[in-house]
Length: 396
Ligand code: ADP
Ligand code: TRP
Image (cartoon, rainbow, N blue to C red; front, top):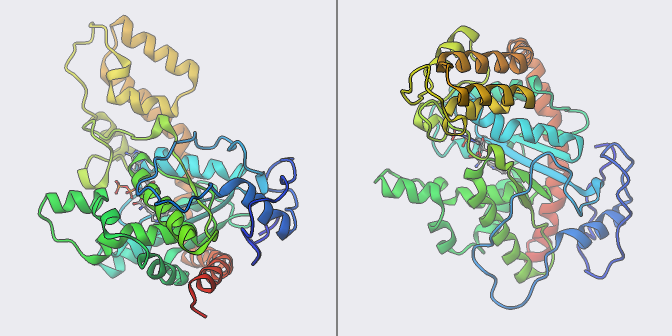
């Protein structure tokens, strides 16, 4: 991990450290020595604690993704996020998570992973889980993850995370988990719930905290999980003293919730997705199915109330957006035309990565090699942080 020293054992010893070195550039700069790194973490990450009861749901502010986060020295910004291997990635995943997360490689040391332990809460098909894992490795490869400078891995290759999850679960109040949406929604529907689903936010907290992550790019639906993570970390620090870095969510507001074909949130569970790397002919057909109102061609239309435009604006340049917004308002435009424009703009951006994806997907040794290398780098950091935690709680 060039330019980003793993945090040393003396992390977070006091809050009276001098200011860190000024921010001078991006990640590629040689990092500060471990002590300076620890000082910068102290200076920037640790929220003031009080010995008073900690609030159980910390409100979090969203910060625009991909924008260098103010106040953090470049060397200390560590972005982390995960995605479950539970189906084909779609445009919601791409716009809400993958694209902003990968852009953050320019300004943050990035740790991205395939959340296969989390997928086990719902996936029961072992070969499918393995295939989806390789799919995602190929997706990150195709979208330009820099595996040398950053860290990409499979969650279950770092079993230390389950050990941390157990330790964290011992300080997590049940009430916090009862509030979690995924659990609440399934309960409301009368669906069967396993313990893994109930404990999902604790494992997610461990995922984030075990890498001293400072920023977590996700879609809006994950915001509550982030709040729970912060609560758990603050509680741990309250009980055992400064140990864990409190992360910030990074939710790109404009793509917080990407609509699906029917206008609801695009999601595998609603069956309303446009696959990220689907066959272009099929993708075009799917785009043509996006639900619109039934206004006739001649009638003026509102771009801001249209599901097609909501997707189009994420792929189009500002002048193209302005052009089409004008055509909506003027009347004389059929929805078929803007759907075609959307498909063309998507192709412009996604055709080349799709080819890279297809080539990589045929090359299992390449993908396994990527995962192996990432696991090694991730485990190094995870062991370090877990050691710090075990020391604090009296294990070892
Ligand atoms: P799904 O809802 O299809 O199961 P996941 O839960 O696997 O998707 O989401 C993986 C990542 O993609 C998360 O960071 C999530 O916030 C983001 N994401 C998923 N769907 C959308 C959407 N429609 N809009 C914005 N972000 C999304
Ligand atoms: N819960 C996330 C999702 O459903 C996946 C995930 C697991 C994750 N661990 C994480 C995301 C840690 C961010 C950070 O999309």
